[in-house]
Length: 172
Image 1: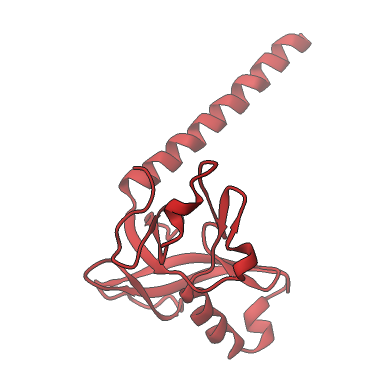
Image 2: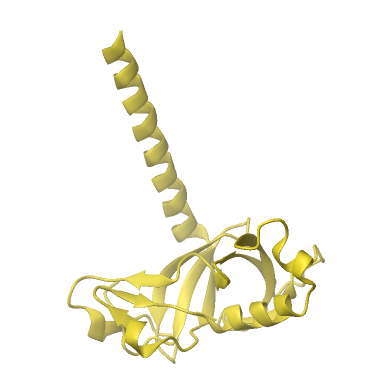
């Protein structure tokens, strides 16, 4: 009986993992493209091993807007962790610019909501790092934008790094 329970548990776990993979693959293939400008990071942490530390200009605009709010509005019950949405406007090349924090307003056709979270006082989108193959750091030195795929719920997944002319860096 214990073996049957173990096998069923394993099948359930594998099924859930595969479902999660399928959902993320759909998100990457069908999500709307949004490009976020990178902000400077500590040069010592720019390239650490096989990843690049990331920070986005949009996070600075969010932080500034949040800092203008009362602390109870900003952090809610948990001062170390919160999440919400930011409204951005997309230009012709899908580069996002800050419009404001989400107040459940009606969006214009060129606007979109992006999910963000605050952890340890830092604003993060899908990730704060871009991982690449060992020895490929030089391919990403010219990175100035992160390309994200956004689903209908505003969740973002980092899909590529782009140079100043919005060309993809690294292998396809």
